[in-house]
Length: 379
Image (cartoon, rainbow, N blue to C red; front, side, top):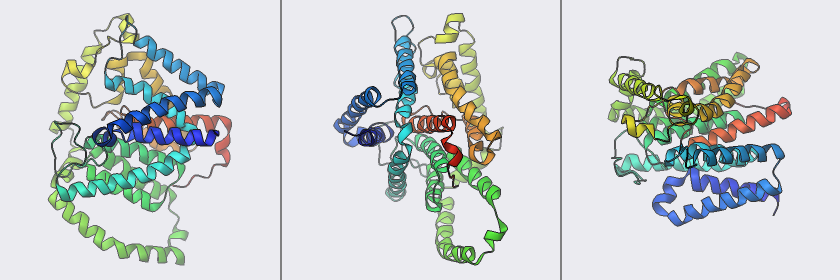
């Protein structure tokens, strides 16, 4: 089999088995097992047959780290969530050299996800029901995922990936609408903010007043009234979304106060670690001890996996953020992402984790090789 075919099969298996795992878990659990098994088999075959030595070293180091933390002496990873930290890194590396095919598949995933959200709006029920405690809530739709926050984090990282690789106006609109339907402030604020900043940074008044542009805007306005009417009705029926967005800027709101409380609980928890535990952890899921998640990626990583995994996550994202000093418009969203991670468990789930690491390793590899010098970036 050719490398291209192997790459495409691995990418497809990862999307269906891991990124869209909630759908298959509910409707076709046997197929999910098949896709996950295919990923592992094909990934091993690709690494041994076509893999570059550096990529192989990355994977071996991660696997060895995983085995170390699962040893009988230091059981760091003993929960489903914790395992995802490492697996997402490995899976992201596997498809980082096939990222444009990944983007093509994800285009369909994003469209299908939006259509299912629309279905949920009219049916007043969730399409995915694998979490029994997750009751239907008007204004918070989840599409292909098991809860609305998971869908929100998926949209944040997907938008980041599409933006970096270049995307169309229609896809930007799909991201915007989907983020609003999740009812999550995280994706709404992140996507809207970047769309506005990108527009302001790229604005060219000569192009705006060109005949072709005026014609384009004229046709766009034909679709604007029904969109405005729809969202006006939508926000009237779902006023909770507006309130939640406004509360994001009210630091005395109950949501912020609760988040600060659990932040402090997590900090107090790992302050009791001894010297060895500071590097390898206690082998416990801190959320179970504290009573809630920290809603903070960095705190979660440090409290549950401590220094080693924390640095594995931090250093690559920090490196790409520093690239904004050379090309601000291209890389500044990663700075925002690092800040956003302070207010949500972003990049710790299957979908958002895999997509983020595929993009990170793509950027690091291509930037190092100098291929991005001639890379045409379209926002």
